[in-house]
Length: 243
Image 1 (cartoon, one colour):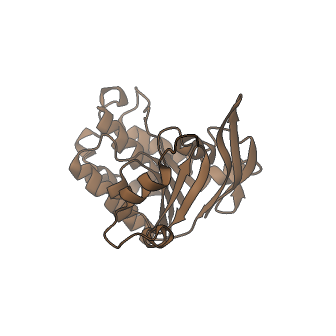
Image 2: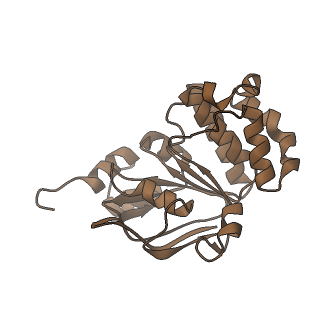
């Protein structure tokens, strides 16, 4: 449902993403991992059409984000690392706005359930300007879930959430996976990625350096069964002098 094909993105003389290819299939959560500066956020912003790729293609549910941007965007729900809600819209007005923008007003019947799970129902009449960072993150997630996208793209979705919020969000993500949605999740929380994700894509300096399930990475690295994803990540991304 998400195909990233030979994606490259250059900022002046810096190549932030270098000939990157991977897929996210229906009914799958894929973790996008890498150290700071690896190109994760740049990749996600290209997927979300917030950045124009220098070269390569991105397909969302079969639609190229460059050639058919309207259809591609209808298939995608994007949650940025730092949400910026409309300051003068209430929580509920955000959901109504998103539902209307995607022509899915009927999905507002799920608004109370979504907001309740994310501890936002009692704040449904609060303005975006009054929300804390964690509440803004929850609101961004609520907006993503209200329009029934086929592909979800999350950039550090758990940062700033309280433990209950984290648990509910992960539960909602797994429910959508079971319904056949595809999810790409960028995160530094490797223990969470190991439990949540079906596969991981690991970047370093804009390049793909490893991809697969945790079991496949263990086989590749000839690691023992008790080795964690964090251990393998650190081994794969270790900086070697002179490299």
